[in-house]
Image (cartoon, rainbow, N blue to C red; front, side, top):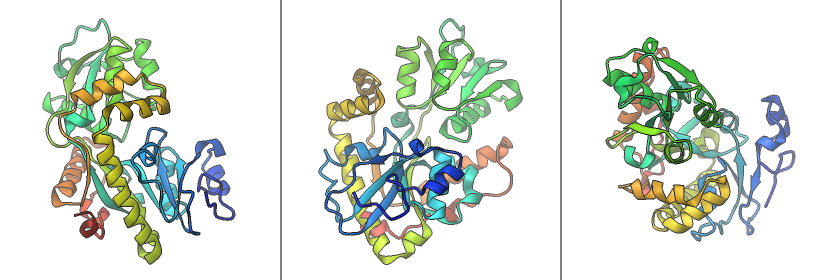
Amino acid sequence: MAVRPGVSESGFSRRAILGAGVGLAGAIALPGCATAKGRTLGISTTKEGYQNFFDVAGQADTPYAVNYAILPFDLSLQAISSGELDAGSNFTDIPLTIWGGSLKDNRIVALIRSDAQARLLGLVARKGLAARSAADLKGKRVGYLRSSNYHYYLLQLLEQQGLTWDDIVPVSLARDTLPAAFASGQLDFWVTQGIETILAQRHYGGRLVAQAEGDYAGNGVVIANRASLDNAEKARDLGDYLLRFRATIDWMESHDEQWAEILARATGIDKSYYLEWRRLKKNPTRLVPIDDKAIADQQGAADLFRRFGVAKGGFDADALWDRRFNGLLA
């Protein structure tokens, strides 16, 4: 893998990582392309991210090196904004409604659309709690991930039940600490998503009392640095990467067993849980061109956060989206 001078194998400079208070272990180099021709794309991701599937989907043989960096959400945004990385595939559109003010150097360039059923956003009650629905939230300790799809769904539930933020005991925790808090009885409810919704029930004995419905519960998005987009060579490589990304997602949607096995290896979570998640999924996830609905959906999420006072000031969703790759992805 090609590595730029002065940059760690993660694609993130040592000074930037250390300055952000994260050790070099916070950014991990993952296999990119063995046939690079002096060009590199730096992409942020997560350990269970799409990069695990490019090779098996036949999309890893790029004419440039792909340098993946495993970073948390906030550091991913910083790395892309600063130009340390070119783009990121580990984002959903909802958190960006909170971070909008710090995204002036970034743009959303592609949409990874999935409906609420596919995301499996849910509200799970702890074992032994006499709760049957979201109507039982009042006065209860509710664990969630702040400024996220989870937070959005919790606000939706409160609004649907005519409850306010003060009617519950919100417990904002990091994603990796929520399971332990739920298992130890420190939470009455856990707002979950995806594989967590399965784990909360099968592994921790919880009971699903509500689940998001409809065609929107947050969409995945690809974010790119504006300077990279304005560089003709980088933009060409990003376009090629998006086409390969789309083909990889299509492969994932049609290979359930291999998809589950790869994720089980990446996360240590039992393969059967991933297969259960896939069986519950009704509609496929697709990487598609940006459309007006995607922007309107994100604006609606932003408006919900502002009704509850989570974010202040206005938010213009349209300003974040860049449709330059729409023709390529059509």
